[in-house]
Image (cartoon, rainbow over all chains, first blue to last red; front, side, top):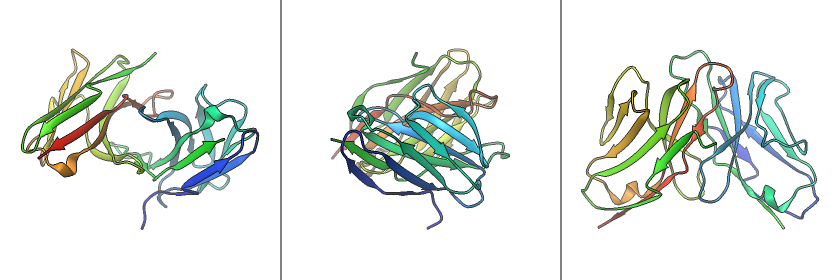
Length: 115
Length: 114
């Protein structure tokens, strides 16, 4: 399977704990995006990378959130001191910047539940 | 401020009928308008997309109609099938810095009944 993969698929944690999610994009894609989706809503942008450079961060991304893409391949999203409001589906998408029609392909998501 | 408004929130269509979902946008910097289909527990999957230089794009049973002056676009699903039952999201994106992420509508839950 050469699509976007995310790990873990599900995470249950207690309030105040730290969690880390991983995203592996499609191999030749140079852009990687993180979105958050709550029940009944569309995905909301969090941040994105071109290669290893983080180009934009949403104001939704509080200082408890940090994302990295150290070698321009996989990416991690860490949430420190989790709160119940962080419960959501975290989606990763990748694309190739340079095509006329740059399509973002989404992974299956990581569903986070904070108790 | 919601930049992409989507309606209806839910839609029930009989098998074989036409499903129509509408979206409106505000940001004139948007120049790429995809529709995504999402099944429960899955990530969104690209269905069809359009750029504003054309007014209509058709792929199989799926058609996007685009009205640039009204800043509106819609998805039409012809001959709707039970397998089309899913949540559909319209989205929009620009190509200049600050607009390159996708801005999504709130979604339409489509149910096709026999």
